[in-house]
Amino acid sequence: MALHRLLGIDLGVPNPQTLDDFYQHIGFVGGDHSWGPKEAPDQIRVKEAPYRQLLEMRVACHSEKDLSEIAGRLDGIGIKHETSDGKLVARDPVNMFTVTIQPKEVADVPEPEPRPVNRPGNRPRKGARPGIMTEPTLRPPRRLGHVVIGTPNIVATHDFFVNALGFRVSDKVAGGLAYFTRCSQDHHNLLFAPAPVPYLNHYAIERDDIDAVMASATLYLKENHGTQIAGPGRHPIGGNMFWYLRDPAGNYFEQFADMDCIEDDDAWEVVDWNPPGWSLWGDVDQPEVFFKPTDMADLIHGYNKAHG
Image (cartoon, rainbow, N blue to C red; front, side):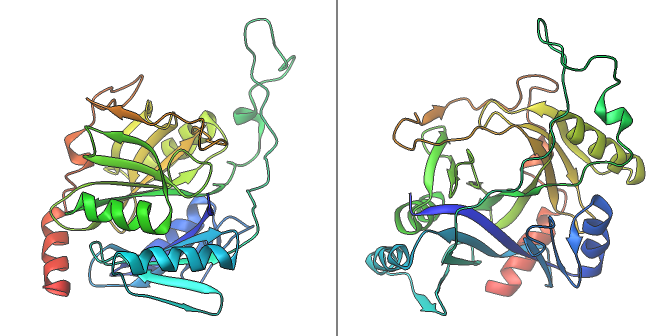
């Protein structure tokens, strides 16, 4: 696969300062509307926009040869693009955000110190209380992992991301109603599902383990009442533990850990989930609000006003 990493996204919101405060509070580093882990403090860039939306996705490939091949595929389906300063930039003709692809070295976030976990027959945590109790501060978020978008045209979105840009399909739902796609070894970096207009459904932040997911989400809910969306649970599609919350700008954000890792593209078997599963434990049914956010009317109005 020519693509190997999700580099970051640009979010548009009416008041960027609200997200500056939020990202700093949850443990990202950066400033001046640019946030992420210490290794990549510009993973999430925040810009002013009339309504909340995804403005850009940034992806890494291996070489300039990859850029040339992607450009050829975009030409083949009639999508405009530009290549300059070692970057290819194309605008998603359906969902109206920019995708920027550039060669970068293959990299991952540093591996955190694992917290010992006692299991039957293997009990490394001897004479010690759980790390989540004894560590002086909450562990920081590790990276932006994926985004999920709603789109009015699944087929055209698949054509752009999969056939032209080179995202790989990991799994699909109901014969192609929705697609889980990847630009790395993560099970998914981009999921697209049906919606009346293009919109950002959620973005996902990776945490160290289930303790980090549970502790960070519990603290956020304690400090921000009314922000619960769904979770905790574990998705069968992707395998990740999750907890979904609402950020101060109205976006859903997921805290996740332990997602499926696909090292061999050819060996991975794509499953058509029909019906799709939501969670293996906890609330096993997807909440209605997940794909019908309470501000959907505002999103429809904002999109139609901006794009006609």
